[in-house]
Length: 528
Image (cartoon, rainbow, N blue to C red; front, side, top):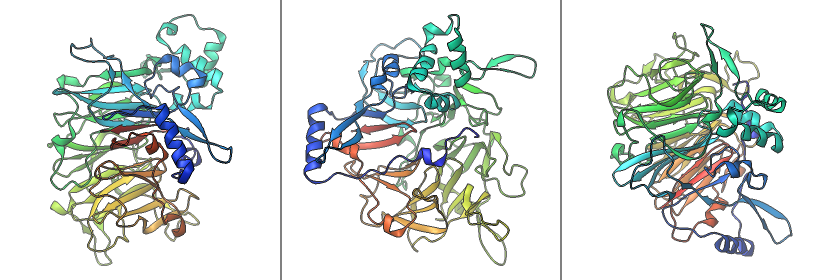
């Protein structure tokens, strides 16, 4: 996208765990200011997007634009940290609230995904699961424009999008802000029909239940957990104005922006306003895993077939060189089949069980997968070493899956996850290896994987292994261990690079982390 943020704007500051007396004092501060309970969902970050579901008042209050708190350290300096706040649900639904729902504290969270400006949760109440969404689930470009505005102008634009203000006569300032943020922009269709590019109503200031079609309900993770799954499958994903969720029927639903076909529903449109089943003529088995890039998606079915859709201009759909769909956008779902092993004599194409996929992930503009034969592949933007005709380029695109090499022999690859510009692999011994563009200086590390975390550090098997923006987050087997690791260019930086995030100090002693999801300007943490 021409309006996508630069790489540097996506890199949060590296955080380290405080030690000694300073750490003890900060822990005491949080103990005094927060009361943590088991089975909770927390969030922190920017509030004006609505992603934390705190309502219009918080979205418009300059003093509450972020949930940040300043904690004084020993040197009279201020270390800006984020104060976790417990998210709540007031029972708002797209239909009349059902009897038996208890608004307030959210319990039974079985899925969480933080998009660029929205949050999606799956909760289980009694025997029924529900999808809750807050923030801007249909918005990306307006979100970027709003962030560039000074706070007073941004607040004015947000206030103008409130339901009670949408139909009033617009002032000159209203029109100016609408122009700057693309709110209420119109576009003319093929037959002269005028439609909205952006709809202010797409802002959900509080968590709101979104219903799936045909009385389907969100899938429960245990429903699709395979016997050999070391890393749990993902059934809920969120990205830039895009959400994907698997129903208990095994159907994959998407909603949000669709100008690049990223909803996979068979045609390109500005938006898909309600959950809609993807168009996948090849699918006969239930979808068991989903991943979203910036404007493309991946889905894995129960038979090990991998599907992709959306923007493919940089090869992120993996359709192979010389094919009719190479580097093109696809509004309907395509199958990824071109998994080849390099050979000097002839092409070796994986077939049968060897070609089945056991795990897959999507980065900002690239994708990755691991086959049952224990081969790892990446494809898309800047994932291959340059060739002799590529000049001074540090890396080049690949529209065909490229074999990743350099792993220790005789170890299974049990997990893969993509951050914005690099890919991490979890091995059966607990070590983590990576390939891609380094976080610190943008160096391309493409020839072979490098070790990011050595064996013996991670508590296996993991609860979660997930990449987001500049880092990979690992939640250990009992939820007491949470590590974040970035992809550093130099071996010295990669030593002891796995850090315990600061927000862990704010949890109760008995709380265990179930999963973490990081959006562009906010994060969601679920405990049990």
